[in-house]
Image 1 (spheres, helix red, strand yellow):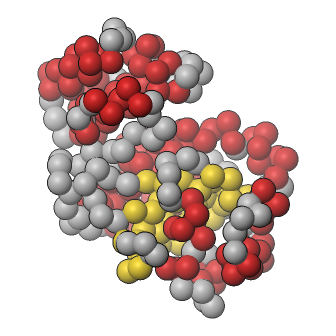
Image 2 (cartoon, one colour):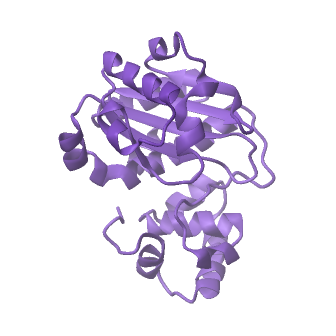
Length: 246
C-alpha cells in the first residue's frame, strides 16, 4: 500500500487528498473511512473527515469512542458492532454509538491510531467494511500493518497540508516499537520503521524530504545503537519476524 500513498503525494489540498484516500481504500475493500483527530483528555476540538456523516448526526465527534478507547496506545483495534462483544469495558453510550454504525454498513473495521512526533493532536483512521467478523479476520486483518503504513503516511500529508507544526521535522511515531528503540531519535525511529516495512532508502528519502545519503547516515547510526546490521534484522526487531515486510 506504500504505492497507493505515494500516488497521493502530489495532491495539494486536503479535499483532493481525502477523495484520493477514499478511492484507494475502497479499491482495497474498505467501505467507510473515518479520519478524526482531537486535542486533550477528554478529547476536544475534534476535526472530522468521513464517508458516513449520518453516523455523527446525533453524536459529537469529541465523543467518538475511537478517540477515548483506541488512541491511548498505537495498537490497531478491531472496530465495529461485530466486535462489540470483546469490548465489554466500553460505557453504554459508546456501545450505543457503535451499534448505530450497522445502519451505515460499517460492521467491522480497523481502528488505526496515528500521530506525528511533537504534534499535540492525536487520533487516526477508523476503516470500516461490510464483512462479518469471521470473514473480516480472514480476509482483511492479515493486511493490518499495510493499512497502518498507508494511514501514517496519509496522516502526515494531511498535517502538512493543514499547516500543522511539530517540534521536529515531521516524523512518524513508529508503532509497537520495542523498548530498545527508545534510544533512537525521532527521525532514526522513522527510518528504521520504513526500512523494516520494506521501503527502499530512496523511497524513505523522498517521503522524509531528505537525501539518500542522509537516510543512510540515520540508518547507520540507528543500526549501531540497536546492535543490528541490516533491514532483515530491523524487521525482526520491529515486528518479531520478517513476515510483515512488503
